[in-house]
Structure formats: C-alpha cells, structure tokens
Length: 368
Image (cartoon, rainbow, N blue to C red; front, side):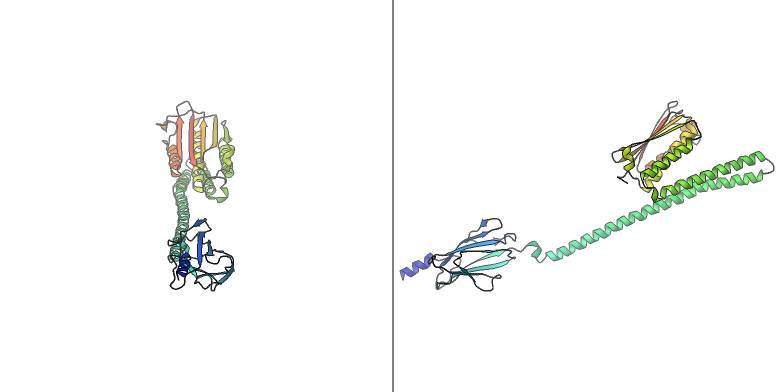
C-alpha cells in the first residue's frame, strides 16, 4: 500500500489531480514557439493571439523506456492522436479560444494528464471589430464624398469667378468702348457737312476705339482658352505684345527668360491677371516713359515666378504720378489691384530722370 501511494505521488500534477488513479505522464514544458517563451505550468496561461504557435513536451515518469503516447487538444483534435514514442507535439495557427491538452501512455492504465491554456482573440476576431470596421468605412466614404464635393465646389466657384470676371470686363471695358464709339459716331454725323475736319477726327477715334475693343476681346479670349495653359504660350504672347507695341518706335525691347521658367505653369486666373499686368506695364512705357530701351526678365524664385519690367525713361515720383500720366495713376492702381487679386506682390521703384522698375511676384505651379 505504501509503495502504491509513493508511485502516485511521483506522477502527481498539482493542477490536474484526478480522483482514483494517478497520472504517469508529466508535462515537462509548454512554450510559445513564436517568441521562444516558456510558461510556468503552475499558473494560469493566457497567450497573446500572436503566440499561436506552441510546443508541448511530455514524458512518462514511471515507464519511460517503452512508453507509447497519445494526445489530443480540445477544439483541434477530434480524437486521440497516436504519437508512438515521440514526446514533443506542436500546434500552429491556434484561434482565440480555451484549450485543454491531454496526453497519456497507452500502455499504462493511468488516466490522461491534462492542463488548460487560453489564447486571446485577435482584435479582428472580437465582436466589435466588424461594426467598427463598417463605421470606419462609412467615415472614409463620407470623407471621400465630402472631398469630392469640395473639389467640385471649387471648380464651380472658379468657373463662376471666370464668368463674373468676363461679365465685369464686358460691362466695364466693352461698355465704355462701345459708348465711346456711339458718342463719336453721333459727333461725326452732326459734323459731317458743317465741319469735315472734326468729322475725320471722330472717325479716326472710332477706328482707334474699335481696335482697342478687338485687342481687349483678343486678350480676354486668349486668357480663358485652355490651350494656352503652357508657359511657352504665355511667353509667345508676351513677345508678340512687346514687338507690336515697340516695332514702329525707337525703343529697344528685350525679353529675357530663365531656362527653368518654361517648366512652370499658371492657372487660367493667374495667367490672365499676370499677362494684363505685364501688358499694362509695357503700355505705360510706350505712352509716358519716353524711353529708348525696355528690358523684361522672367525668372524662377523657389515656387514663385518673378517678372521685372525696367525702362530707362524719364521716371516719375510714385507718390505723385499725375505729371507723367494724366489719368492720375489709374494704370498703377489697376496693376496693384490685379496683383492682389491673384495673391501676388507688386513693387515699383522710380524717380524723375532715373527710369522705372516694376516687379511682380506670383505663385507658379510645377511642370506644365
């Protein structure tokens, strides 16, 4: 009787004690092969979901020489797995669940040895994952729809600004020109017989105003034409305007463009205001500067496009431009207003007898 009790005590596992007979097989080691961590079998074992590759080592403590083992793992093995004399078993890809491992020596009458361990559910296996994922997808979809709406709204607003600008220009510029033509035509009709000289002057003015209308319409159509988006088209237009203004004068016109400028691009709105500022600057030189040379330079400064228009004319006092321009400096104010409209920076440097330098800095895009 004493011998039987002693044998039972040698094979006893504190966590798996069964009434009646004692187990002869003992669990030697239980390890996570994912990170090579072994666990204390006398404590509850809870594995992270990433530790789902495990190894179990066991041995019969009473008859190790001729032991033949069988084992099974709940929720994995449907029946006992015959292992022969092999004393190591591994399991991989265990799902989050509660497991009971049992092992026995089929050649002995001792009951199976067993122990429990738990594997945590992965976050994507938990009950809340699918609802959260669904909500996240709804949020992403909502953000996508909202961003698409903003892009579309910006396009609509940009188009509306273009329409408003065209309507404003047609009302202001074209209306003014056409009113002038109407008044001049009435003057010519009244003086047709009484004063042929005034009639001729009125007809000349009508012709000049009509040419201005054509010129302004050409600028307007060019600025909104998407086929002129490239910088090469802008440079060609700038060259054409300069040559047209100064071809019949003694003014030497020079346009210098840095190589990296040709890779830039301007939006339709910026391109239009940029070009009109440039044209206004050249027109002021042709009308008021009494210069014999004008130099235009275009270069890139970071992501910005820098335009410089410099003449060697009579110059003027920027604080009192009326002596040079009877219009009272409206041209300068228009250029400053246009620069502000596109977020640009316009600076002017001039003094009587020292010529004038106008510099415009606007944000430019990348390669066109």
